[in-house]
Structures are given as structure tokens and as C-alpha cells.
Length: 269
Image (cartoon, rainbow, N blue to C red):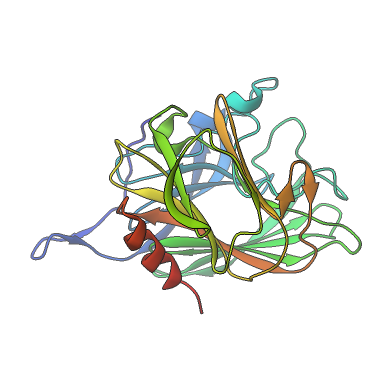
């Protein structure tokens, strides 16, 4: 799906985008009319749904949405399951997913709002989970800052690379330097630094996901006919993350493995 993105500024002398973050409030019409925080940045626009606490759309510089969430009940892989981080599922609630029929509510507060950083914190209705969203000019960090005692979670990308799930899609990861077909699955502990990136042969960019803390938990990718299913701390339908953890997601304007790997490593503290 295509979007027209407002708010991008350019240095006309050197024709390079100026780094910025801008928060507005509105509706994500493509997701079924859900109320959203809209965060425009240098190379992406994020729609963070206000009641469920998950991303409903993640739009690149071309106006293409790499998530494709829609809240229509029964749409399954074609809409209602999609999003990020889709973290808490039948684990002391169902939280931090763009609002669909199965999502439980959360409350939010804007903690930081500047031209270089926006922070929004969501707290689950049962007060046992907290997720912190930090938007920067070229990436988004999601931190599970509070975990319900005795429960576990995963952090997932369920979406559509370059707007549509098809045979032109592929993925890289920290496990090896190969380009893998989109229907090739993976199950294992990604080596440090733990990352995966999704692309399309027709796209000049890739969408990456980075887990900042190394662990020995499984990471799992499987394809569905209409979306990706990748989870840090996931094996099939089992969840393994039990402590506060930080993750990054964003676009890299390259489809070369070395460039993707180098850019991701630069994000680590």
C-alpha cells in the first residue's frame, strides 16, 4: 500500500535529508481507521496505535508500508496478525499489538518530544507490562522495560517486505552471509550481534531488526502465504524472553550484505 508522507525536509545545497523526528496525532486509515501516534523521521514514518501499543504501519521513503496491519476480524495473516512487536500473547494478557479483536488495552504517555528523539511509554491495563518506544531519525528502539513476573514474551516482525509478500522477497541474518529466499525458514540462536533483515530484489533498501542483548534463546523465522513471521526469543509458538530487553527496527538504504551488517553493528552501544 502506498502513502504520501508529509514533513520531510531537505538541505537543498547538498541534497541530503536533514535528520529529524516529528510527532503528530492522527488516524491510520490503511489499518482500519485506528487512532495513532504518527512519527515522521528522516527515512521512515511510523504509525503507533494508541490503544493496543503496537505499530500498525511502517512506511519507507517511497510511501510503501512494510507491515500492512488491518484490524478486520478474521483477516488473519492478511491483516489482523501483522505488526510489531506483537510481544505479549496469551502470557498474562495480550498486549503491545496494534488493536485487533484479541488485543487488550494499554495506556500511554509521551515522555520526550524533541527534533531528535521522541519517547512514548505504554503500560498494560493490568500494570504488569511496560514497553518503551524511542524514535530517532533513522531507527526505532523498542524496550520491554517491565516484564510480568513468571511470564515470558517474544518480539516479532509480522509484515510484508516492500509492501507485498512474494517470491522477490529475501532475508539476511547474522548467521551467515547468504541471501535466503523468503520461504526458507530458520530456527536457532542467532549469533551476536543478533540481527535479521528483510528485502525485495526490487527495493533499494532493507528493513532490519536487531536484538541488543546477546542470549542463548532460539530465534525463529517462518513464512506464511501473506506475511513474514520472525521472532526473537521464539521457537514455534513458545516464548523465551523473561527480562527487560532492547530491540531496534529501521531501514537501511542498501541491499548489500556488508553494508547492512556494518550499519547494524554501528547501532550497538
